[in-house]
Image (cartoon, rainbow, N blue to C red):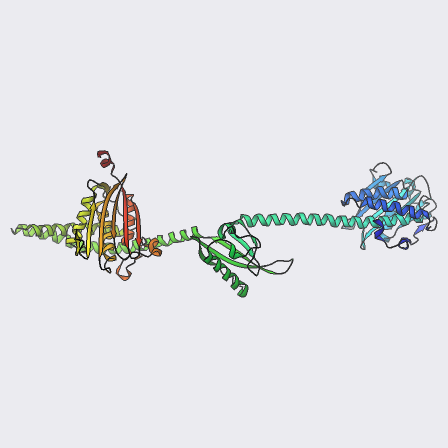
Length: 566
């Protein structure tokens, strides 16, 4: 394996940088040395850790050359050098700087060439060095660690007992070994750097993955064909379990209409690069989505990033804000209307009372119908006055006047008023199925609730008027007012067989100023009904089918005293 680093033995021919020693001899010693060199290189390559390579390289160099001591010096990135391994045949050397010849090490570093000195004492230029004399070095060799032209350090071996231990063969083998050790060391460093890069890359992937997985929004990556490259759990939760890597976006599993819209938006994004944020309905949720461009570096192909977020809560908050602004506007308008109504109502109320007093003073006897009419006028002015107060506080009605009420009596009085006074129910016949419009009262006896009579009258009048208007365009219709006890609740309902309300408008009918009647409606009736229901703690429900009719139902708590009596 080690012999793969050079082509033939001619590559081992050294340049003569030695002082003394024999000429290079291609005898059996070389073959023996090469065999040992191959074994040492094989051993050296068993571990790719730089620290282990340095330790093994020094032990192998001592064994290969027959030296007594060995030192390895590495060059730092700043140009400084330091001892990394220092040992003799048996143990490590504690103080390497005072034990090794730094003069020789410096010469090898500066010259980037190997050095062989077989007889230090005979070398006049070194014997005068006090450090050399103090260390009693007899023979030494040094060779640079060079890989791909980069100087990594110096390997240095010596003897203190005998001169002439090293020769040219030793130098060739030593230089070759040091070169291969340098290559192994550089490879080990690259291997370590690669391992560290992989660890960092994996950590970066995990870090980015944790960011993407912790996002409150869905994130998906699509290729040009619309296939999924990545999808975080939030995207899967929004678009469906079919959103898998490698599968088309169309197979995600959610609403096909929404998926088709996303696919078209992706096609448009690839064509125009349009990145504006869009919204749509997705399985009864409001979602926002947008695309962004990204490039994968390993293949350079463009991908599209998809960000999709559930904005249902945001939409609800926006709706609540709009409702709040609407109600504020309604309050301001209602306050002005109520002021004008009160200004016009007070003279009417006063004139009715004054008329009754004058007739009595003149001795004019009032017939029962006239007396009933005056009483009705007085009652209606009081009711209008109450309505004006409620208009001023449409979203927060004025303090109600709660009392125990008989439900049947309450409904009957409202019906009679609409039949005789306002004329709203004129043309509606009770118990006559042959008439165009029939009126059915299905009211149980003895039902009592605790409520505000003026508020409940307003709710009933609005419910009945809405039903009457809904049946104006039908040939025959039926209006049914029901009141029944249902456990601890009393249900009061108004049903008609009118035109009905479209399903897409049912969620909006209780909003202020929303009307199904066009210019004819004010859009306040259902909002008032809802507010009155809230004040009374009543559950308000609305059921409607286009072409069949509408039922508005109020479920009131039973008055506790009535429950104890029954």
